[in-house]
Image (cartoon, rainbow, N blue to C red):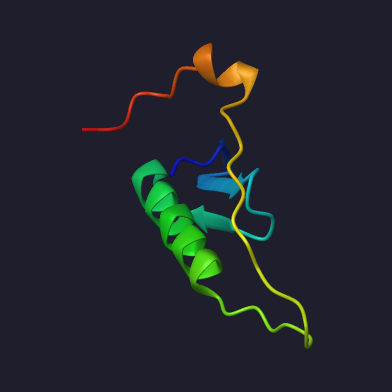
Length: 79
């Protein structure tokens, strides 16, 4: 799966967060490390067990790609 990440450099640090997974954010010295940390944070978030009350359940829904998706181009990754 792909998630949208907002990233920027500020005072020698790279900071970022995932728009689609609130609570997943990171701060690192390099862009590459930031992207790795965001990926790990997303994996951890998605693996987290969610407690349910009796007679409730979790289900998956399929959401088509947003209209912006076909126009969006990812930033080139460092070599």
